Length: 69
Image 1: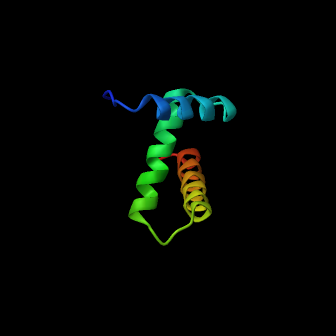
Image 2: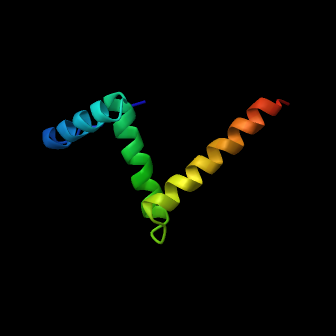
Image 3: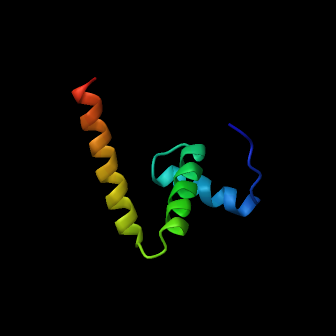
């Protein structure tokens, strides 16, 4: 864990989005960073494609967790 310095205007945008989406400011910033990282790594995918893949992966992880060792 570390400290990331961001512009005050960007921090305000994160704060507003976190309020609307019921996330903490840190969780919203993490979400945007993760989506941005995935978008840069997969430039041919749309946001909807990225979210669909992430949801599918989360479902698989949940099923594996429920199945146990």
